[in-house]
Length: 290
Ligand code: NDP
Image (cartoon, rainbow, N blue to C red; front, side):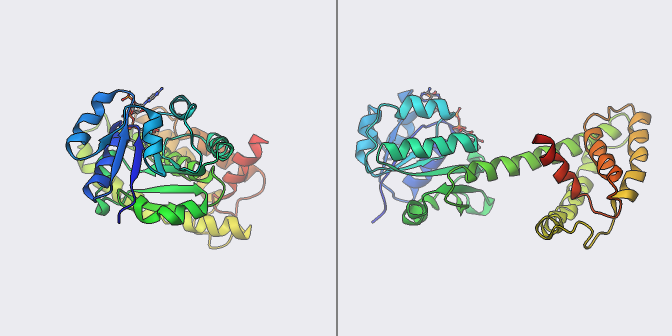
């Protein structure tokens, strides 16, 4: 017996999720503000609810994938959520997720928050490697893990409802740093007779080769010893920064993406941490916020 699912929100992501459950034979009830977006799914076998109340009453498991936290409030603000299992896959901040968990509890619902590490074409395609971070009620996660695993992988990261959003934002933040580095690299060759499609595979392989450095960073953070296993110490790396800045200047490229990181490296060096890895930069970031 496949668990019946109610899906609220049929945007690009909601539709992809809904379609995966339908394809796997889960009874599915859908609702969307603009009802036209439910038509294709109705033809594929979904029940279309006319109202949110009807959709919420139809099943215990309620999956929500709307634009943002405000739209969740707008859609579910007036609904009777008593004894429902609410799984909110709408992107938001950790604080919004924690507030939403309390809000759901006050309404007699169990709550699981999700952060989607996939784009719609990866949904229903296990080999694409997409997954969703979940946090909040462990009991709810365990009860529905099989159903939740149908469209995309799952990774439960803790009872704190904000942790899924925090993991999501942490990974995406690192991605932006990587994109920033790649942007600078392409800018450096932009005016030369170098084919960007020849640089791209070199860049991709290099980023993949460097990525495992995060494991050593994590070990150093855990032990508190930032000199353990150092290969390229901070003093040496800071000594190399003029090469990067001069090259950028010679190529007519703005150093604005690289400079902030170099400035943090120099500050850490000035504190007498020349023998360390780059890990101490993390403490500067955190301390600066206090
Ligand atoms: P879309 O813009 O395609 O769809 C947005 C959905 O939210 C639609 O169903 C829309 O309804 C609904 N909506 C917006 N405002 C309201 C409102 N005030 N009241 C009722 N319904 C509302 O977005 P996606 O489906 O792509 O994204 C949904 C969530 O998934 C977002 O939080 C997004 O961050 C997250 N996500 C998306 C990814 C992606 O690549 N697309 C990747 C990872 C996460 P209507 O059709 O009536 O306008």
